[in-house]
Length: 324
Image (tube, rainbow, N blue to C red; front, side, top):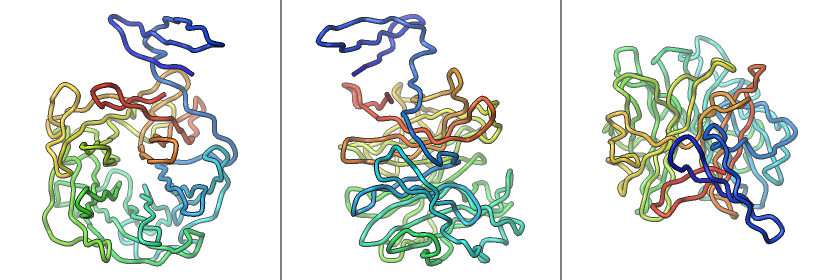
């Protein structure tokens, strides 16, 4: 077992429990971030989302033609499981310029169904839309189109991609989303339909038009943690994506980082960044699993392949998360 903590200067202390002895290993701060945990099989993914199945095992969805699906029995070995929409999703092509490639799904299992929010857009455009589909099994071809949730036009100051569903402590449903432009937004949903309940849009994070996207709000204890990705995705090994977090006692904010800086003013505490042969980790999701919280994300290998990353999450004495 290992634990890591930053210390003064450019070093970290790593305490290893080895056969009953404690060994202190001091290494450069560049080693502070762990490599992804071991995964096998079909692990080429981009923008992954994951949910634990009610009967055991896992369903993973990620960006791809018709939304790509994978399954795993143990969160380690993954295999391809087709596409949510193997015959295409004609209702999305207005936003994708005819492409079948759909982005950044979000998965939840509630009330006996899988709920999947996903994005339709083209690179660099905010003529975008988020749709909802549901399925009782999660299998390829079983997903039913449930409707348009939110869209953005070129005249809007936000971008309707990268959705994430969060249910607050009172049982209310919310959808966070956003990329670049004026930042991360939050809208209320009708829990009966999963669709938008009113026209109010709440701003929860932003970098004054800079690179921020992929929100994921996870409730733990008295806090809502807003995870986001800063900087550039989709540049292969040159990607600069990094995983940031802030928190609030209210799902609608204000969210602040460890130093008290508001996330609407560019704040965010860094949890994971590129190191060694791990380039641009980001588009994270948090899985509250039976053995604790898990961070699921993609990163790029040296050859530019986008791969699945999984790490465990722990929380320090002040309640701030770190990965190991």
